[in-house]
Image (cartoon, rainbow, N blue to C red; front, side, top):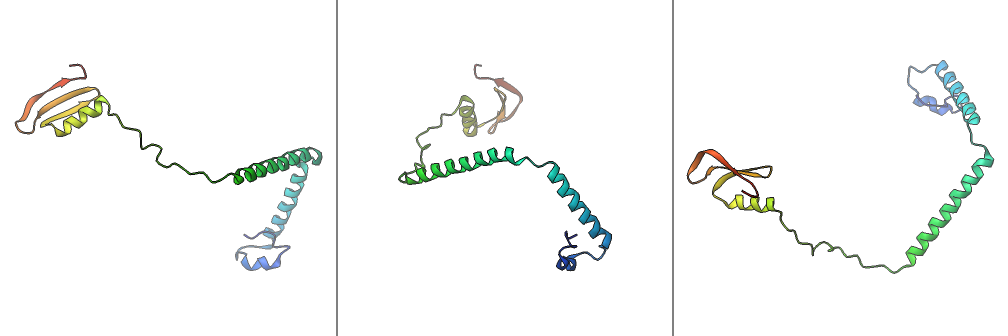
Length: 134
């Protein structure tokens, strides 16, 4: 429902067909009450002046920092900073890599390794387990 249709008659064209005069009057009273509440809860001007001054000073300081920073020459950005870092695989990563090339069907559960058979010979029927220190 469009607001302020009592002041702006051109908004009546956008109004829904069910809108009646009491809707317009109710909206008008609500606007008056909202204005009264805003006056009751407004921050006193003397208190607001110091806060406004702080914000204006802050804006000046920030604009000065921006101006000084923009005067510096453009620096070259190094985008390959992490190229020299080499990945060192953990013990678990090494085991998983070895399992991929192994002929055994093995499973790693936690820190233990269980072998349940060989791809060439079939399953052994039982699984044997070993850990980092078998």
